[in-house]
Image (cartoon, rainbow, N blue to C red; front, top):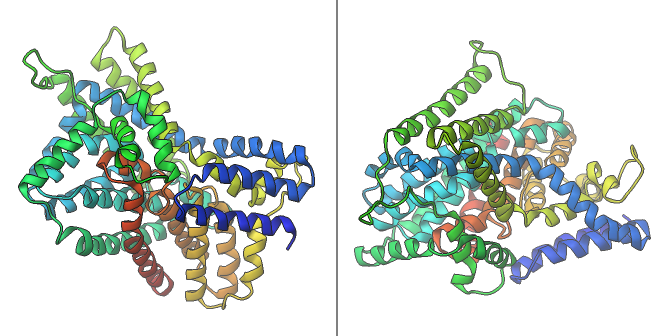
Length: 511
């Protein structure tokens, strides 16, 4: 391998070591991009330009994710103005009767909402209603954060069954139908999630429920964390949490919690919350029904011949377009005179929220892209059509021959590769690469390429999507629950890794 290969691999290793040392990873990613490009090209100007190009490429590739988060957040914001978001979830509170049930309900609701809307946009809704109710009956905030992260940032995101973005990316390299990868990824994610939830319950929930006095104090703390000027505090606090520096609880969580804690309609004249009216009831019923119909059509198209099958990768555009139209409809229902301005305001808020919570992954993803041939040519300023270096693929190819051509070994090798790819804090930019590797290993080891691609997709998504690395959307979960992001990542490590190992073993044998 060339010096550039070793520099790139050292950069990945340094990234991991920096996380352990609780230092900033964004600056390291920028430096790693510059040095890798400099060593590969031998040109200082190419190295400097590569830093900017990497950010452009990463932003372009991640834009669909940012945009759909923004649109769904905007829609939920419009519903929040009417109080319809509260009405949509409030019936679920009756099931939260004790800490044990609260853990289960929080996990199930987070999973269902995250599968439909993606996890990050629905976090304000969960923070507004279910989280205080769960803590009030004795569920520790840390346990609540674990349930939310495992089911939302882990289970729902790793399968991405409804949107189909992740499986579409994996299919690009594996050259197999995206639907086949999605089906296997769903099963693997469910097994990993159930195991992780079970381990976490036995370790962090069953014996650590709060007594009524402590639970009441914790609920008040959650409410107080949502006060203040969210726009002034969020960016700096989220950045501090992303850096992993320090142990100051307030410094890591207050600003993000302020951003995410949703508020209902304006207070009435006596200081009591205003009661949602007929329009809020209509919206609270119509919006979930709209997405339920969309989900039913997509599932019927995939599993039956009753309706035409939706092309692979069309899930995200359909959900995003539906959310955008719903935003307009809710804005019109809420205020017919000012609905144009209302749509613009909510969309701007959604864009800001998406980039505040996920923008930190851009330079990190840019560094990872330098090692992927599909993007490295553009980052290094190579001519159009020129094949860029595949630094990461080349490095893995060097050890590929040492991987026993046995399905079980190939499966765990793909899990490890996926988890390494997930160090970018997102998990999805490297899925075309893992798909390509799955195709090669699958034919050599006699394993199903779709299964191997699904395993790698789970490894990358669980790691970078928001359960193991602290510069991912795990920041958001930690912020809304008021727990230190580093503590949350530590408590998630054993359950998540255990779940992934068990799920991979099952997939290697049964899928």
